[in-house]
Length: 147
Image 1 (cartoon, rainbow, N blue to C red):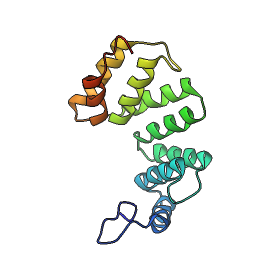
Image 2: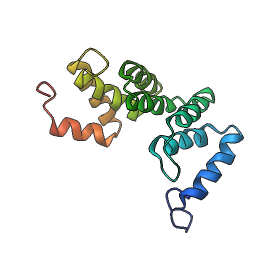
Image 3: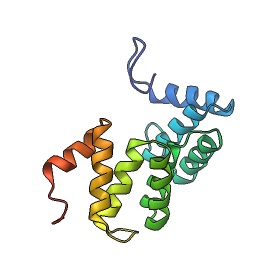
């Protein structure tokens, strides 16, 4: 809430981190997931991939399969592309559209996984049909066979 400037206030990332931390300490997966992204991106705190991974893993243990997308992001930033692909695949299997998009992106490029443009296009289409804007943009702006 504070992170987005909602609730009548301006953005206050420090306060957002504090509030997420309280909720995460109480075992709330969404707060753990949010803290993972805060540390992964370095929003209001120093970037810390180890802490990000810790919070993403806690969120997953709490049933938040979308947090696998965050795990994939951390792995990708660390250059561990096969592990990133596996994590994105788990996020996608759990219904996370960002995970599906990221899985398709790696399949399209062949980074960390055997290139499979047909499967990438299928995943982009599935995500786009469910309203994922980045997938729609890729489908509108890219000839997947040539990229």
